[in-house]
Length: 111
Image (tube, rainbow, N blue to C red; front, side, top):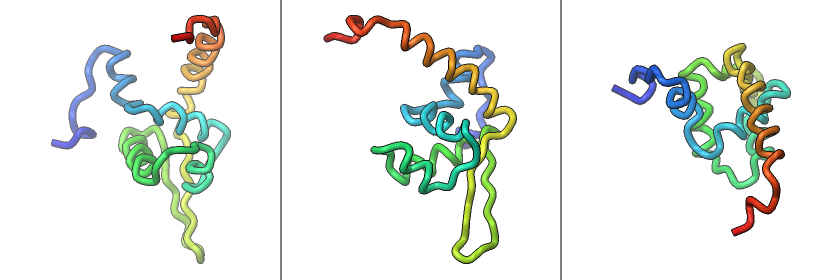
């Protein structure tokens, strides 16, 4: 059984964290909120992400119905990634996370 075949837990927070696993997940979704992106556009928008990690996250999102992958029969080949309606629903989640984080005083980030 692969991780995509495992049943999701009943707890919404646990389910969310399983679907958006890893430090890059929310940032990849953020990049796709403005519309379809090619792999290179995503990678350029996420300095420091490896091609391997980006590929794995996109495949996982596709398996869970969060992202669609469209390959165009062109020379050179073109592939675009786009949020599904389910994935686009994450906009409110990310907006809320961002608003909350901006409300935290900078002094709270001091070591």
